[in-house]
Length: 342
Image 1 (cartoon, one colour):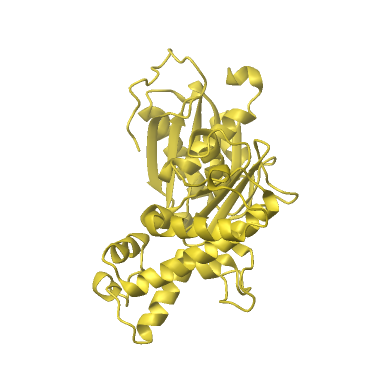
Image 2 (cartoon, rainbow, N blue to C red):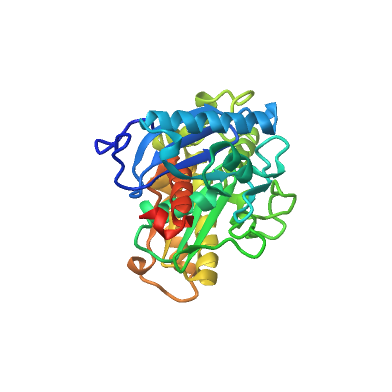
């Protein structure tokens, strides 16, 4: 982040339109100027501080946007459009964030129109995980496929769906809320209030819950040496360290979560019949070596129509922290009239 490409276009010498991609998260805002090939040519980041209110957060978004453009040695009038990935439900056509649980008091916020008025250029607002999936589809691990299921386990489990080369948003802008696909009737309570959602079974939050429950029940784990359980969370990095040291408890819990993810993935593929599945997010980045083989094996076992692995690749995401902003940027570019994209 923040490093410029060797082929960085200079002011007044742009060969193709540049767009701005923004990842609006609960804790930080990331922004990058991105060329038509999906190359980052300038970046900036800032803490979100949404507790200060909607207007203050939007002001911080604008400052981060200008910082990223400056880092690219450009002016805002050389930016063709802005794409922004926001948490929660977003109305892409209206540019409204309908509800964002990770942002304080964000209900029906007209983010797109407000930023467009301030910047004087088109602004497109998308759900963050939808944007991340689109980023992997256009310039990441799923490039070249026309139908993609994106699964991103973390604190929760988010998803995105590409069908026929287009992002599928659904009739109410709520498609791919895959974290609330029920996999265990009367299972653990989910954050949504229901029981047995895949998010309540296999997210990092669920994994942490299960590890803590086992430790409190008297089962030993190296986690007690790695984390102060009275005040700290069990991060993905901690899980990776415990796995690397062969901790039996963490290994059991992670393997069980991966198995549930595989069964869930088979159900999604049985429904959508996508060409590939992309797994990303912090949990996968940290624990892919253990989780992905189990996810693959369980997925292929439970497919209603047997498929050879080479015909349904289940692959690790490639874009890391840049997935959302790159996807938002590429969506913005694709949403411009054709003459503005060429």
